[in-house]
Image (cartoon, rainbow, N blue to C red):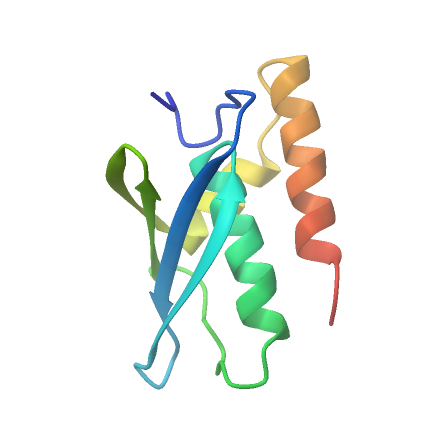
Length: 109
């Protein structure tokens, strides 16, 4: 369905994205995304901008992406997402996706 976590499919899926902050409080948000990593980027931006959410952390912090239809769940560590974002794109489509995800993460505070 989605291929690699950063692969771009072209159409959007409704996703529920959740993770725990450093105080072990779980947070969940619904986003529309075309890849697992796009869902992660949107959720991180929302969580980081929300005053109710403590620091999410980095490194081994898992983020769960549950695609709603068809229902499937993916878990990505923040460090894996950030490392992928910094690697050289394998294609023009991946370059566009990475640029878009960086822009999403740069929005807000």
